[in-house]
Length: 140
Image 1 (cartoon, rainbow, N blue to C red):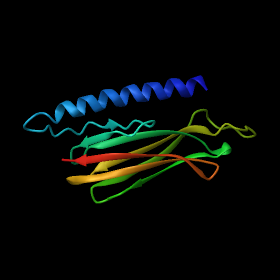
Image 2: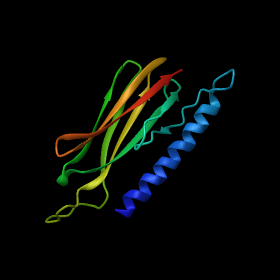
Image 3: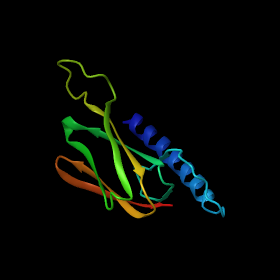
Image 4: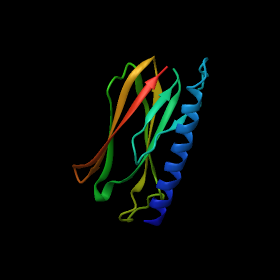
């Protein structure tokens, strides 16, 4: 449990730092054509600014055997698309091991063209929606 809290805090602080950097870039008269991947905060939805071809990473903790999963929905997939959806176990699964399927699901999104869209992230527990975050994405 402490590992999850520590990981969440690290991801939160990282996302805040990335958000501040992105907001700083928006004040320039000539926006930088950055392709550096940004990290979306898994605990709170913020507004994000991306450049065309830039990617954004969202990592969610999941534990399938207890029913903890996530889903993402993109409002306009012509502006932003999901390019990768991967799951990595926290511990390597072994035969006969129970409850060892905790891990991290990594979603990678790519900005395709200018516009505004949203990403809806659903936190699901045993088939029931527990929470929903909506991320506003602007692509320049």
